[in-house]
Length: 262
Image (cartoon, rainbow, N blue to C red):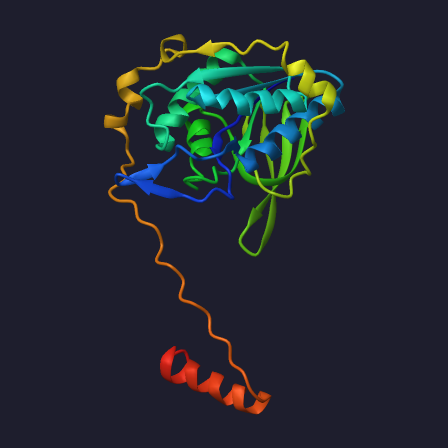
């Protein structure tokens, strides 16, 4: 079973975002594999291990730095990694990204596609679903439990919905987007880290994928950013001192007269 995992590289969630010249300054950003994609990687590895066969291929779209995300997946146990060059692609636009990924999927071949439910940078939660539509495949999003049977070409997934969960049966191939709770991602082993040094990561261009650069360019993006601004600084907290009865009265007065919440 050939499992294709799309992995995005995103800023570390602990990164302090700074603005420069009206846009996000990425010069000091620490880049990591998207946390939700880690669940997708782990699930792909578990499926291969349960079946005792198959191949897990990790694909990442973007500049040269995304190779680090690919190497991370390889150190966990993925079999192959592919870097899709993102030169000129509107990487913030889910339609443009899904269009390129669809071309990569067709070139790589697959029985199942896994990716995270969203990137923690833009939080669109759209690329995986658009990808499925472009490939004319069934998809299940925000999945927290997954079963696949390559012999019957059927699968079953439990997905989160508001107020509960639902179980969905689908045919293979399909696109699955992973939610937190699907599994507990493993750590890279020393053996895996050392093995990455021997891995060759091929590079694919838009021409290799048969994708028209103009269709996924920044000028053709369906999403545009108008303005960036940081949230206003939080006001300094206040500490009420004194006897409990007095501080309780003062707190109520502040909430009623100043905060206007009572």
